[in-house]
Image 1 (cartoon, one colour):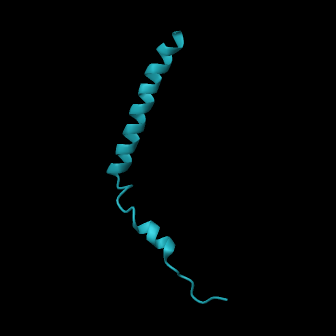
Image 2 (cartoon, helix red, strand yellow; image 1 turned 90 degrees about the vertical axis):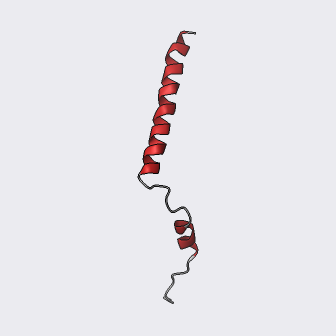
Image 3 (cartoon, one colour; image 1 turned 30 degrees about the horizontal axis):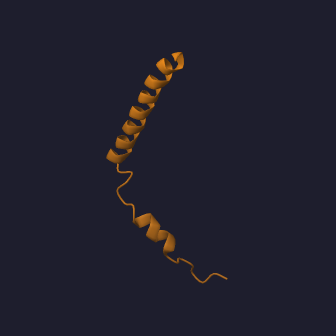
Length: 50
């Protein structure tokens, strides 16, 4: 039972830290272009070498 006095507040702090990191990344533009990198992988940029 004594472990809960430590683990519950610690888990709440971790959850709020994860939410803060998510919103911080969202505000900095981390999730702006989700389609572009996926399409760049599919483009064939071989120049006939070989």
